[in-house]
Image (cartoon, rainbow, N blue to C red; front, side, top):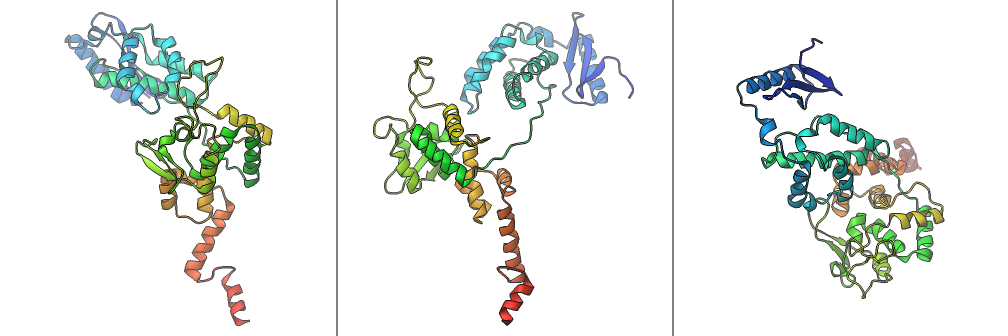
Length: 361
Protein backbone atom coordinates (compact mmCIF):
# COMPACT_ATOMS: atom_id res chain seq x y z
CA UNK A 1 0.00 0.00 0.00
CA UNK A 2 1.36 3.43 -0.98
CA UNK A 3 1.83 5.70 2.01
CA UNK A 4 0.27 9.15 1.91
CA UNK A 5 1.79 11.86 4.08
CA UNK A 6 -0.68 13.02 6.70
CA UNK A 7 -2.83 9.90 6.46
CA UNK A 8 -2.55 6.92 8.78
CA UNK A 9 -4.66 3.94 9.81
CA UNK A 10 -5.67 2.96 13.33
CA UNK A 11 -7.78 -0.15 13.90
CA UNK A 12 -8.87 -0.04 10.27
CA UNK A 13 -10.00 3.62 10.44
CA UNK A 14 -8.24 6.27 8.34
CA UNK A 15 -7.07 9.39 10.19
CA UNK A 16 -5.65 12.62 8.79
CA UNK A 17 -3.10 14.98 10.31
CA UNK A 18 -2.59 18.62 9.35
CA UNK A 19 -1.94 22.07 10.78
CA UNK A 20 -4.80 24.48 11.38
CA UNK A 21 -4.78 28.21 10.67
CA UNK A 22 -2.85 28.82 13.90
CA UNK A 23 -0.18 26.25 13.11
CA UNK A 24 -1.46 23.76 15.66
CA UNK A 25 -1.36 20.04 14.95
CA UNK A 26 -4.82 18.57 14.23
CA UNK A 27 -5.66 14.86 14.07
CA UNK A 28 -9.06 13.93 12.69
CA UNK A 29 -10.85 10.64 12.09
CA UNK A 30 -12.47 10.24 8.67
CA UNK A 31 -14.82 7.55 9.98
CA UNK A 32 -13.94 5.04 7.24
CA UNK A 33 -11.00 2.93 6.09
CA UNK A 34 -10.21 4.22 2.60
CA UNK A 35 -6.77 5.85 2.40
CA UNK A 36 -7.67 7.35 -0.96
CA UNK A 37 -10.80 9.00 0.46
CA UNK A 38 -8.82 10.19 3.47
CA UNK A 39 -6.26 11.80 1.19
CA UNK A 40 -9.03 13.76 -0.56
CA UNK A 41 -10.41 14.92 2.79
CA UNK A 42 -6.92 15.95 3.87
CA UNK A 43 -6.41 17.94 0.68
CA UNK A 44 -9.70 19.77 1.25
CA UNK A 45 -8.76 20.56 4.85
CA UNK A 46 -5.43 22.04 3.76
CA UNK A 47 -7.15 24.11 1.07
CA UNK A 48 -9.70 25.42 3.56
CA UNK A 49 -6.97 26.37 6.01
CA UNK A 50 -5.00 28.11 3.28
CA UNK A 51 -8.07 30.10 2.17
CA UNK A 52 -9.06 30.92 5.73
CA UNK A 53 -12.27 28.93 5.46
CA UNK A 54 -11.47 26.29 8.01
CA UNK A 55 -12.75 27.68 11.31
CA UNK A 56 -13.55 24.47 13.17
CA UNK A 57 -11.18 25.28 16.05
CA UNK A 58 -12.41 28.87 16.42
CA UNK A 59 -16.17 28.62 16.62
CA UNK A 60 -16.31 25.77 19.13
CA UNK A 61 -12.94 26.22 20.80
CA UNK A 62 -14.45 27.08 24.18
CA UNK A 63 -17.34 24.61 24.21
CA UNK A 64 -17.05 22.29 27.20
CA UNK A 65 -18.10 18.67 27.10
CA UNK A 66 -20.10 19.13 30.31
CA UNK A 67 -22.26 21.70 28.51
CA UNK A 68 -22.99 19.36 25.60
CA UNK A 69 -23.69 16.53 28.03
CA UNK A 70 -26.09 18.63 30.16
CA UNK A 71 -28.08 19.86 27.17
CA UNK A 72 -28.21 16.35 25.69
CA UNK A 73 -29.54 14.95 28.96
CA UNK A 74 -32.17 17.69 29.37
CA UNK A 75 -33.53 17.55 25.84
CA UNK A 76 -32.90 13.95 24.80
CA UNK A 77 -31.11 11.52 27.14
CA UNK A 78 -33.55 11.48 30.03
CA UNK A 79 -36.47 11.01 27.66
CA UNK A 80 -35.16 7.82 26.08
CA UNK A 81 -36.27 4.45 27.44
CA UNK A 82 -32.68 3.23 27.77
CA UNK A 83 -31.08 6.34 29.21
CA UNK A 84 -28.36 4.33 31.03
CA UNK A 85 -28.26 7.12 33.60
CA UNK A 86 -26.33 4.90 36.00
CA UNK A 87 -23.41 4.90 33.53
CA UNK A 88 -23.09 8.67 33.33
CA UNK A 89 -20.86 9.10 36.42
CA UNK A 90 -17.96 7.28 34.69
CA UNK A 91 -18.35 9.46 31.60
CA UNK A 92 -18.55 12.64 33.67
CA UNK A 93 -15.43 11.64 35.62
CA UNK A 94 -13.46 11.01 32.42
CA UNK A 95 -14.58 13.95 30.27
CA UNK A 96 -16.59 16.35 32.42
CA UNK A 97 -13.71 18.74 33.05
CA UNK A 98 -12.52 18.90 29.45
CA UNK A 99 -13.23 21.13 26.51
CA UNK A 100 -15.03 19.21 23.80
CA UNK A 101 -12.33 20.11 21.27
CA UNK A 102 -9.65 18.43 23.36
CA UNK A 103 -11.43 15.05 23.29
CA UNK A 104 -10.01 12.92 20.49
CA UNK A 105 -10.85 9.48 19.17
CA UNK A 106 -7.74 8.21 20.95
CA UNK A 107 -9.07 9.59 24.24
CA UNK A 108 -12.38 7.82 23.73
CA UNK A 109 -10.60 4.59 22.81
CA UNK A 110 -8.39 4.76 25.90
CA UNK A 111 -11.44 5.38 28.10
CA UNK A 112 -13.28 2.37 26.68
CA UNK A 113 -10.16 0.18 26.85
CA UNK A 114 -9.88 0.99 30.54
CA UNK A 115 -13.51 0.06 31.14
CA UNK A 116 -13.06 -3.25 29.34
CA UNK A 117 -10.69 -4.44 32.05
CA UNK A 118 -13.56 -4.61 34.54
CA UNK A 119 -16.77 -4.52 32.49
CA UNK A 120 -18.34 -6.73 29.85
CA UNK A 121 -18.19 -5.76 26.17
CA UNK A 122 -21.91 -4.97 26.29
CA UNK A 123 -21.46 -2.53 29.20
CA UNK A 124 -18.49 -0.87 27.49
CA UNK A 125 -20.56 -0.43 24.32
CA UNK A 126 -23.31 1.20 26.37
CA UNK A 127 -20.80 3.88 27.42
CA UNK A 128 -19.77 4.35 23.80
CA UNK A 129 -23.44 4.70 22.81
CA UNK A 130 -23.94 7.53 25.29
CA UNK A 131 -20.84 9.42 24.14
CA UNK A 132 -21.79 8.95 20.50
CA UNK A 133 -25.32 10.18 21.17
CA UNK A 134 -24.08 13.29 23.02
CA UNK A 135 -21.86 14.42 20.16
CA UNK A 136 -24.33 13.52 17.41
CA UNK A 137 -27.10 15.42 19.21
CA UNK A 138 -24.88 18.51 19.47
CA UNK A 139 -23.88 18.30 15.80
CA UNK A 140 -27.50 18.00 14.61
CA UNK A 141 -28.36 21.17 16.55
CA UNK A 142 -25.31 23.09 15.36
CA UNK A 143 -23.86 23.23 18.86
CA UNK A 144 -20.69 21.40 17.80
CA UNK A 145 -19.07 20.21 14.60
CA UNK A 146 -17.41 16.79 14.94
CA UNK A 147 -17.84 13.47 16.67
CA UNK A 148 -14.64 11.86 18.02
CA UNK A 149 -16.57 8.67 18.78
CA UNK A 150 -17.30 8.05 15.11
CA UNK A 151 -13.90 6.51 14.48
CA UNK A 152 -14.04 4.21 17.52
CA UNK A 153 -15.41 0.76 16.87
CA UNK A 154 -17.74 -1.07 19.19
CA UNK A 155 -16.32 -3.92 21.23
CA UNK A 156 -17.26 -7.36 19.97
CA UNK A 157 -19.88 -8.93 22.20
CA UNK A 158 -20.18 -12.68 22.78
CA UNK A 159 -23.12 -14.47 21.11
CA UNK A 160 -26.40 -14.48 22.99
CA UNK A 161 -26.95 -17.20 25.54
CA UNK A 162 -30.11 -19.30 25.59
CA UNK A 163 -31.27 -21.01 28.76
CA UNK A 164 -34.78 -22.39 29.19
CA UNK A 165 -35.76 -23.70 32.64
CA UNK A 166 -37.01 -27.28 32.67
CA UNK A 167 -40.33 -28.15 34.29
CA UNK A 168 -38.54 -29.69 37.27
CA UNK A 169 -36.32 -26.62 37.73
CA UNK A 170 -39.29 -24.29 37.57
CA UNK A 171 -41.26 -26.33 40.09
CA UNK A 172 -38.30 -26.20 42.49
CA UNK A 173 -38.01 -22.45 42.02
CA UNK A 174 -41.72 -21.98 42.73
CA UNK A 175 -41.66 -24.10 45.87
CA UNK A 176 -38.58 -22.34 47.24
CA UNK A 177 -39.87 -18.85 46.43
CA UNK A 178 -43.29 -19.49 47.96
CA UNK A 179 -41.61 -20.50 51.20
CA UNK A 180 -39.01 -17.72 51.32
CA UNK A 181 -39.98 -14.71 49.17
CA UNK A 182 -43.61 -14.24 48.16
CA UNK A 183 -42.93 -11.38 45.74
CA UNK A 184 -40.42 -13.48 43.81
CA UNK A 185 -42.96 -16.33 43.78
CA UNK A 186 -45.59 -14.09 42.18
CA UNK A 187 -43.06 -12.64 39.76
CA UNK A 188 -42.04 -16.15 38.61
CA UNK A 189 -45.62 -17.03 37.75
CA UNK A 190 -46.45 -13.74 36.00
CA UNK A 191 -43.18 -13.61 34.05
CA UNK A 192 -43.43 -17.14 32.68
CA UNK A 193 -47.14 -17.18 31.88
CA UNK A 194 -47.40 -13.72 30.29
CA UNK A 195 -43.86 -13.49 28.77
CA UNK A 196 -43.72 -9.86 30.00
CA UNK A 197 -40.32 -8.28 30.50
CA UNK A 198 -38.99 -7.67 34.01
CA UNK A 199 -39.46 -3.91 33.78
CA UNK A 200 -42.97 -4.28 32.38
CA UNK A 201 -43.96 -6.25 35.48
CA UNK A 202 -42.16 -4.32 38.21
CA UNK A 203 -43.42 -0.92 36.99
CA UNK A 204 -47.10 -1.85 36.97
CA UNK A 205 -49.69 -0.13 39.12
CA UNK A 206 -52.83 -1.88 40.32
CA UNK A 207 -54.86 0.59 38.25
CA UNK A 208 -53.38 -1.11 35.16
CA UNK A 209 -54.37 -4.61 36.27
CA UNK A 210 -57.85 -6.20 35.99
CA UNK A 211 -58.38 -9.41 37.97
CA UNK A 212 -62.13 -9.98 37.46
CA UNK A 213 -64.29 -10.33 34.36
CA UNK A 214 -61.57 -10.57 31.67
CA UNK A 215 -58.28 -10.57 33.63
CA UNK A 216 -55.49 -8.66 31.93
CA UNK A 217 -52.62 -6.23 32.49
CA UNK A 218 -52.23 -3.08 30.41
CA UNK A 219 -48.77 -1.82 29.40
CA UNK A 220 -49.05 1.87 28.39
CA UNK A 221 -45.68 1.88 26.63
CA UNK A 222 -43.56 -1.12 25.68
CA UNK A 223 -39.90 -1.33 24.69
CA UNK A 224 -41.01 -0.86 21.08
CA UNK A 225 -42.91 2.32 21.97
CA UNK A 226 -46.39 0.81 21.63
CA UNK A 227 -49.04 -0.03 24.21
CA UNK A 228 -50.37 -3.55 24.69
CA UNK A 229 -52.85 -5.51 26.75
CA UNK A 230 -51.81 -8.96 27.96
CA UNK A 231 -54.36 -11.51 29.26
CA UNK A 232 -53.74 -13.07 32.67
CA UNK A 233 -54.29 -16.81 33.22
CA UNK A 234 -56.14 -17.95 36.33
CA UNK A 235 -52.97 -19.03 38.13
CA UNK A 236 -51.49 -15.54 37.67
CA UNK A 237 -54.68 -13.91 38.97
CA UNK A 238 -54.58 -16.02 42.14
CA UNK A 239 -50.87 -15.34 42.58
CA UNK A 240 -51.30 -11.56 42.25
CA UNK A 241 -53.92 -11.56 44.99
CA UNK A 242 -51.26 -12.96 47.34
CA UNK A 243 -49.07 -9.86 47.01
CA UNK A 244 -48.85 -7.79 50.22
CA UNK A 245 -49.64 -4.70 48.12
CA UNK A 246 -53.01 -6.04 46.94
CA UNK A 247 -55.73 -3.50 47.88
CA UNK A 248 -53.12 -1.62 49.97
CA UNK A 249 -50.56 0.08 47.70
CA UNK A 250 -50.47 1.77 44.30
CA UNK A 251 -47.82 -0.52 42.80
CA UNK A 252 -47.78 -4.31 42.59
CA UNK A 253 -44.18 -4.34 43.77
CA UNK A 254 -43.74 -1.12 45.79
CA UNK A 255 -40.27 -0.08 46.88
CA UNK A 256 -39.42 -0.18 50.57
CA UNK A 257 -37.03 2.25 52.32
CA UNK A 258 -33.97 0.59 53.83
CA UNK A 259 -31.09 1.71 55.99
CA UNK A 260 -28.86 1.89 52.93
CA UNK A 261 -31.50 3.55 50.71
CA UNK A 262 -33.91 5.52 52.94
CA UNK A 263 -35.28 7.31 49.88
CA UNK A 264 -35.82 4.80 47.03
CA UNK A 265 -35.19 6.27 43.58
CA UNK A 266 -38.44 4.79 42.23
CA UNK A 267 -41.83 4.11 43.84
CA UNK A 268 -41.61 0.50 42.68
CA UNK A 269 -39.01 -2.22 43.08
CA UNK A 270 -36.21 -1.58 40.59
CA UNK A 271 -34.61 -5.02 40.42
CA UNK A 272 -35.48 -8.45 41.81
CA UNK A 273 -32.22 -9.92 40.52
CA UNK A 274 -30.41 -10.42 43.86
CA UNK A 275 -33.50 -11.91 45.49
CA UNK A 276 -34.11 -14.17 42.50
CA UNK A 277 -30.53 -15.42 42.67
CA UNK A 278 -31.00 -16.24 46.36
CA UNK A 279 -34.08 -18.32 45.50
CA UNK A 280 -32.30 -19.97 42.57
CA UNK A 281 -29.36 -20.94 44.75
CA UNK A 282 -31.61 -22.33 47.48
CA UNK A 283 -33.53 -24.33 44.84
CA UNK A 284 -30.34 -25.80 43.42
CA UNK A 285 -30.86 -24.34 39.93
CA UNK A 286 -27.67 -23.31 38.14
CA UNK A 287 -27.02 -20.79 35.36
CA UNK A 288 -30.54 -19.34 35.10
CA UNK A 289 -31.01 -15.58 34.78
CA UNK A 290 -34.17 -13.73 35.67
CA UNK A 291 -34.62 -12.70 32.02
CA UNK A 292 -34.54 -16.37 30.99
CA UNK A 293 -37.99 -16.76 32.54
CA UNK A 294 -39.43 -14.83 29.62
CA UNK A 295 -37.89 -17.31 27.20
CA UNK A 296 -39.89 -20.22 28.58
CA UNK A 297 -43.24 -19.03 27.21
CA UNK A 298 -42.27 -18.68 23.52
CA UNK A 299 -40.38 -21.98 23.64
CA UNK A 300 -43.41 -23.86 24.97
CA UNK A 301 -45.77 -22.24 22.46
CA UNK A 302 -43.50 -23.15 19.55
CA UNK A 303 -43.10 -26.71 20.81
CA UNK A 304 -46.89 -27.01 20.85
CA UNK A 305 -46.94 -26.07 17.17
CA UNK A 306 -48.30 -22.53 17.56
CA UNK A 307 -47.41 -20.46 14.49
CA UNK A 308 -44.65 -17.94 15.08
CA UNK A 309 -46.91 -15.18 13.71
CA UNK A 310 -49.28 -15.85 16.62
CA UNK A 311 -46.43 -16.20 19.11
CA UNK A 312 -45.11 -12.80 18.05
CA UNK A 313 -48.47 -11.19 18.78
CA UNK A 314 -48.68 -12.87 22.18
CA UNK A 315 -45.12 -12.19 23.34
CA UNK A 316 -44.15 -9.03 21.44
CA UNK A 317 -41.02 -10.68 19.99
CA UNK A 318 -39.82 -9.94 16.48
CA UNK A 319 -39.57 -12.84 14.06
CA UNK A 320 -35.75 -12.84 14.22
CA UNK A 321 -35.86 -13.04 18.01
CA UNK A 322 -37.99 -16.19 17.89
CA UNK A 323 -35.23 -18.05 16.05
CA UNK A 324 -33.31 -18.38 19.33
CA UNK A 325 -36.13 -20.54 20.72
CA UNK A 326 -36.89 -22.58 17.63
CA UNK A 327 -33.51 -24.30 17.51
CA UNK A 328 -33.44 -25.25 21.19
CA UNK A 329 -35.85 -28.15 21.22
CA UNK A 330 -35.22 -31.43 19.37
CA UNK A 331 -38.91 -32.19 19.91
CA UNK A 332 -39.87 -29.06 17.97
CA UNK A 333 -37.70 -30.17 15.05
CA UNK A 334 -39.33 -33.61 15.13
CA UNK A 335 -42.83 -32.12 15.14
CA UNK A 336 -41.90 -29.92 12.21
CA UNK A 337 -40.70 -32.72 9.96
CA UNK A 338 -43.71 -34.86 10.95
CA UNK A 339 -46.05 -32.05 9.85
CA UNK A 340 -44.24 -31.85 6.50
CA UNK A 341 -44.51 -35.62 6.06
CA UNK A 342 -48.21 -35.55 6.87
CA UNK A 343 -48.89 -32.77 4.37
CA UNK A 344 -46.84 -34.22 1.50
CA UNK A 345 -47.19 -37.97 1.99
CA UNK A 346 -50.47 -38.20 3.83
CA UNK A 347 -49.24 -40.20 6.82
CA UNK A 348 -49.53 -38.78 10.34
CA UNK A 349 -47.06 -41.18 11.95
CA UNK A 350 -44.35 -43.61 10.88
CA UNK A 351 -43.03 -44.14 7.36
CA UNK A 352 -45.15 -44.63 4.22
CA UNK A 353 -44.27 -48.33 4.19
CA UNK A 354 -45.44 -48.78 7.78
CA UNK A 355 -48.69 -47.04 6.95
CA UNK A 356 -49.34 -49.32 3.97
CA UNK A 357 -48.71 -52.44 6.06
CA UNK A 358 -51.16 -51.25 8.72
CA UNK A 359 -53.80 -50.55 6.05
CA UNK A 360 -53.41 -54.02 4.48
CA UNK A 361 -53.64 -55.67 7.87
